[in-house]
Image 1 (cartoon, rainbow, N blue to C red):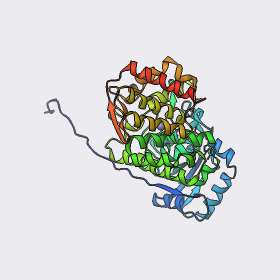
Image 2: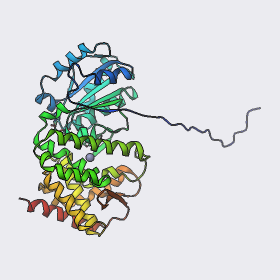
Image 3: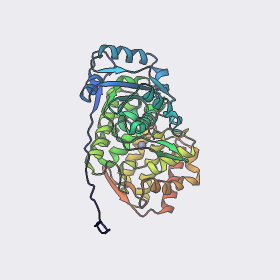
Image 4: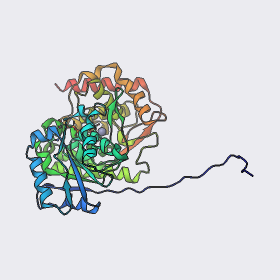
Length: 386
Ligand SMILES: NC(=O)c1ccc[n+]([C@@H]2O[C@H](COP(=O)([O-])OP(=O)(O)OC[C@H]3O[C@@H](n4cnc5c(N)ncnc54)[C@H](O)[C@@H]3O)[C@@H](O)[C@H]2O)c1
Ligand SMILES: [Zn+2]
């Protein structure tokens, strides 16, 4: 007799563990530097597709030759397939999914499987686009990142996310896909433009203000050296910023952001909206600096934060060169960023701001009038610098 049809459930519960290392090295493609070769060896070795940022390639045109020479020297651990794929520079590479097409085609052409690696070398935008293409081909070809901007080495290149822009929104399409390794090569930063050098530092101000007053104080002391492109000061900034981001990803219990709060996105609701309103003329880092100023001013305006702490945040932003007027701050649509931010994360709108230096707080009830006043204040603050 057939079993009677009754309601039933089958439990499917499992966890998957992830882990990767973020390495720091002065010159990863120096023939004697074993970091990349060892990363591949420890991950099963094998075939590797290089992806290069066109802006980086223009600044360092010997990179393809250096990669080829490195491949020859370390032939026991790695084998490059074909020539490097070159992706467009900057945010336009994240304009929809189309720019990932050459990566997908090369993965198919060279029969790369889930044991093969994509080596993405570039700024945060190219890493996001290449990471998305790798994560979705065969449901996940392995990824090693070599971030080549300040922002990418300190933040964008070291985490677990990728994404491209679509439907008028930042990072509308993307995945959580931890890399197999990250190599922060200091020599790549030599050619970063002054603009990107400056912009990249705002993620460090963000994480220092939120989580580590000692780091914040160090940034204040280092600000003149950082503004003058001192490599040692920048190395300190990148290393601590990356460490604090990794501590959050690995230790805060929500690496794939299933909750409603996203503390590391302090300043980002306004930043993403400003970037979008500017047609991506603004760099992510430039917009983040203004977003930090807005959310810190909101904390001051609503009485959460003492005047002295607010002034220190604004002064550090200014000392690092981020007090730049942008017309988008006067656009009333900036406030639409609040709703879009909530929608992207899911759940009720939750904003992180400061109650003290090194002390973040998640806010649920946002006073829109106070937020509008804060945006106006930051607009005036930037224009007063002229
Ligand atoms: N996935 C994440 O977790 C995450 C986190 C933060 C930011 N992001 C994303 O990162 C992107 C911003 O990254 P970014 O600030 O690196 O900007 P970017 O990638 O736009 O690069 C800025 C410019 O620098 C050029 N460039 C890169 N390396 C160079 C080098 N060494 N020398 C000379 N020029 C070089 C690029 O070609 C580009 O023109 C944004 O799209 C942002 O959304 C992602
Ligand atoms: Zn950011």
